[in-house]
Amino acid sequence: MKPLSIGDLIRQFKQTPTTAPKANPAQEWFNGFQEWLANDYEKVVHHDRKPGLHASALGSVCARRNMLVEAFGFVPSKHTAGNYFTFDVGHALHYWWQERYLGPKQELIGDWMCVACPCARCGPRIAQLGDISLEAKREVWKSCDACRHTGRKVIRGLMPMECSCGVPWQDAIRYLELPVVDKDLDYCGHTDGVLNHQPKKRLFEFKTISPSEYERNFIKVAVPEPKHDHVVQAHAYMAPLGLDEALIVYEHKGSQCKWKVDMFGQFVAGEPKVLPFLIQFDEELWAGIVMRIHDHHKSVEVINDYREQGVRLPRASVSEFERVCSDNKCELAKRCPVSRECFVLD
Image (tube, rainbow, N blue to C red; front, side, top):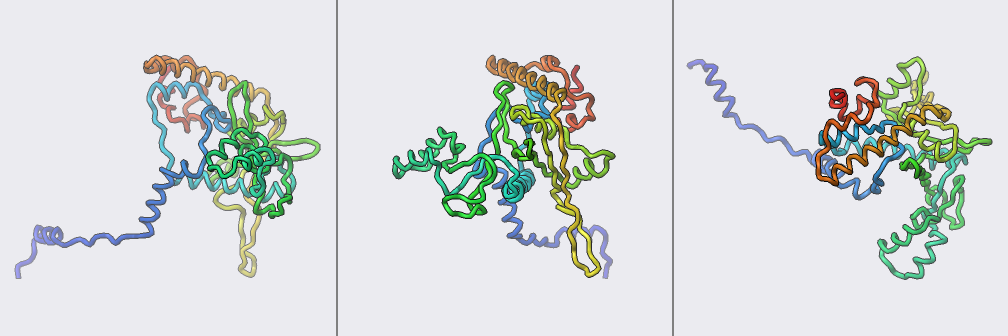
C-alpha cells in the first residue's frame, strides 16, 4: 500500500465533515437577557436622570474637557449589561444600609414613604376624579410636594416603625433620598441621608468599592483615606444643607467580611470589610470646586453659542480654559476620555 503523502493527509482533513456546535439554550437565554439590559432596562426600570450638573460628577468637573469633547466629536460608550450589574449591586446595598440598618436603628433622617397610604393632600383630589388613568394620576402627583410626587404618604424625620394603616414597616416603609439643589451654582443631587448624631447632624454617604480598588486604596497604602471624588461630592451636599461633617462609608463589593475556619471546620465570620471616614468641611477645597463649576457653566454657554450658529467649535478655543489635571498621570486624567488630546494642545 502506497504511503500517504502530506498533501493527501491535508486533503483528507479538509474533507472531514465538521460537527456543528450544539446549541446552548442557557447561554442563548443569557445573551438575550444581556441585550435587553443594554437596550431596554434603563427605559423600563430607571427614572430618567435630570439633565444638567450633578453633585456626583463635581469631583471630575472640567470645562476644558467639555470643550474638547465638543471640538473632537467624542461619542461616549453605551452602557452594557456589565455596567448595570455593577450599578445595581451598589443600589441593593444602599437599600440595606438605609432601610434595614440605619433606618430601624433610628439614626437616619430623611423622607419615609408608606406605600400602603395615599397622600393626605393629593389623594382626596384623585378620589374626586373617579376612575382615571395612571398617567392622569401622575399629573396630579407632579404638583404635590407633600408626597414628593409619589402619591403616597411621606414623613420627614427618623424612620417610622409603624403606620396607622397597620401594614408592617418591613413591607410598607420605603426611604426616599433627600434631594439637594444649589440654585446659585446650578447643580443638583440626592444625598444618601443625614445622620442624627446628637448634638449634631452629619451627612451620610455610602459607597461600594470593588476588591481591586479596596486593596489599592485602603490596604496597600500607609494612610487610607476616602477617594477625592467622594469627598467633593460630600462637600456638594454639605454646603447647601449647612453641615460641617460627613461620614463616608465604604463596603467591599466582593466579600463583606474576613472568614476563618475554627478547630471544628466551621466557617466563622470575622471583621467586616467596611471602612468609615469622618471628614470636615474644607473651605479651601470647596472654593476650588466652585471656580471649576463656574468655568463649567461658561464652557456650556460657549458650546451652545457655536451650536446655535451652526458652526463647529474650533479646537483653539479649548485653551480658553485652564487644564484641571497637573499631569497626564493623575487619577482624573486616567479616567478622562480626551486626556491625550488635552495634553497635546497648549
